[in-house]
Amino acid sequence: MATRAGAARPVRAGLLILITTLLSIPQSVSAQTPWELAAGYAYLQDPPDRLDFPSGWIASAAVGLTSWLSAVADVSRHSHSTLAIDFSTLALVGGVRASARIGRLTEFGQIGVGLARSTSTVVGISSTAHAVAIQPGAGLDYPLGPRFAARLQIDYRAIRGGIEAPIADPRHQFRYAAELVYRGRRR
Image (tube, rainbow, N blue to C red; front, top):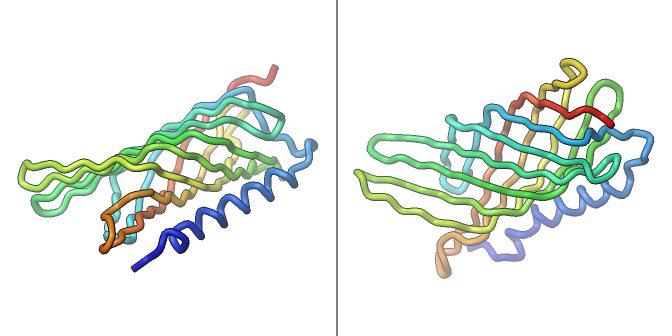
C-alpha cells in the first residue's frame, strides 16, 4: 500500500528541478515570444492500470511573462477501447514554463496544476471521476521557420485521489507529445 508521502516524491523532485532551472537561466539565453499556440498528437501511458491510450491530442497556449518565463495552459484528451470497454481521459492544466535557447533548439521545463477527468464505459454504463492533477514536464522545440517550430514533449501527471483506503490507489500517467508550434511576433 502506497503512502501519500511516497506518491508525492516524484512531484517534489519535479518541482525542485523546475525551481533550479528557473533560478539558473540567464537573461542572455532568452527564448521567449509574446505568445504561442501549439497542437498535435499525444500518447498517454497509465502504468497503475497498465493501459496505453494511443488515440490522443494536445493543444496549448502560452503568453510571455518575462524574457524566459511564460504562463501556459494545456488541454489534452486520450481514449482507448478494448472489447466492450471504452476508457477516456481529459486534462486541463495551467502553470508556468521556463525556456532557454541553446544553439538551434529551445529547451523548456514546465509545471502545471489543473483538473483531470477519467471516464469508463462498460456496455453503455458510464462512470466518471474528477481529480486534481499536478503535471511537471519538459521538451524541445526545433525551429521550422521564423514563426513555426516542431515540439517534442514529455510530462508526468500525478493525480490526487483514486480509490480510498484501505485500497489506496495513487494515480500517475506519462504523456508523450509531438506538436506544431505557431509563435507570435516579437515586439
